[in-house]
Amino acid sequence: MDSVAPAWVGSVFLFIHSDETDLSALYQKPHIRLRIYKALKLTLADATGSGGGYEILKVYESVFGLQLKFTEEVKCRQFLHSYKNDKLQQALEFHFQNQSIPNTAFTMKLKAGTVTLDDILDNPDSCIRHIKENKPNHLCDDEVSKLEENIRQLVLEYNSNCQSSGTLCSPESEIPSAATTLSPSSPPLSSLYPSSPSSIQANGSPLCSTDSFEFQGVLFDDHVLSGQDHCTFAKSVGRSWKQVGRFLKKTCRGLRDPAIDNIAFEYEREGLYEQAYQMLLKFIQCEGKKATMSRLIRALEESELVGVAEQLLNRSNN
Image 1 (cartoon, rainbow, N blue to C red):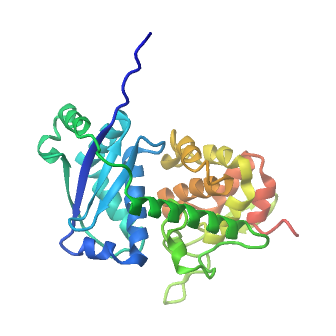
Image 2: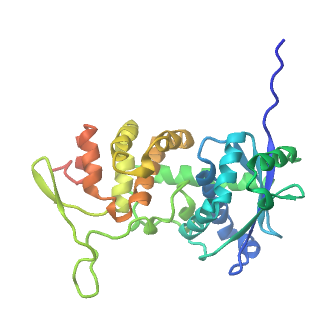
Image 3: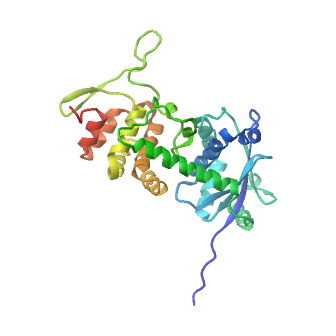
């Protein structure tokens, strides 16, 4: 009988320090703890990609850091590569800022048991060997399990509210303070949208010039996608969100393969609304002020989703 190869398992400790902020004290505040944890999760997703292969076992408060368990070598190598090239640090600073946590510059240290991996990062095979030798000796911490469940519940509640009859979620909506951590990969809504179509400077002139685009023979003023546009799209597009994403990826590097498939896999349990929301979120984050209505309408036309385009342009009831 053929023997089954043992599962690849390893563990690493990531310690995070800031000269500006006492991260341990900050993490102990209940109203901030979930946002910090979410920022950590999003950072790891950026560093390793979606699809599992790792989990957070424990967050340490005294000397702020976390223990990670890897169950796939390829994910572990991706993590090490991101750490070595400062991509992990950049992602963490980005997600802390987007979770409305005080701006913080970080220094990090990586250890496997008693071995400081920072000293041998130029030898990834040696790092991998030490990580694999450092087997985790416990399951996921109870506090981490609670945080995971809290995030899951908030996502479900938020999506239910957004999809309820006649309800649109937008930056102007009255959202409970806990909802700032709702969408599993979204920063606070107000930070996503660089400007509103009606935004003006102090001198009364437009904040940024707008162009026009044509849809079904009618001219519309172009504008950067708003929060209401974002939620209307996610609510209306249904199973066709992937098709729209594939048209958008032609001009958006952030949506190129395998980004769309990763979103589908990572948010499968949350449903079509969340998958569509995350796809357009990726587009907005990558394109900034270039994430315009005209580009989204063009992608919808190419996808033969005229009805969704009409809803976005408030033409469905005309």
